[in-house]
Image 1 (cartoon, rainbow, N blue to C red):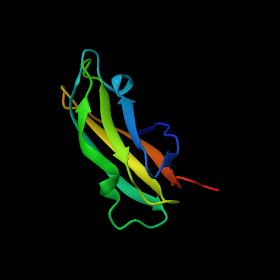
Image 2 (image 1 turned 90 degrees about the vertical axis):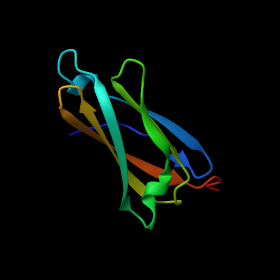
Image 3 (image 1 turned 60 degrees about the vertical axis):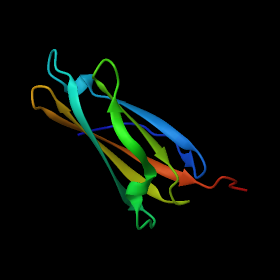
Length: 106
C-alpha cells in the first residue's frame, strides 16, 4: 500500500481528490473500478462514510481515481482508502489522511 497527501479541509468546503494509480499498474493496464472507504483515525464521527460525496469516477486516461470529500466533523482525522482494480485483475490500494478544521478556527 502507498500513501497520498491530502490538505486539511474546512467543514464547509468540498475537496476534489485525484489519486493516480499508473505507478501501481502493469504495463498497458488501466483502472476499471474504484472503491473509496472512509474510517475514523482519531476523534469521533458515527458516520464517516458521509464524508464521501457521490460515486468515485475514473479519469479519461483510466489511471486516476477522482472523488469528492465534503462535510466531516471538526477535529476528526479520517483515513481515506482508495482501492483500484486494474484490467489485469491487479488490485492496488492507496491511503491518505484527512483532517477537518473549523470554518473559523479563531
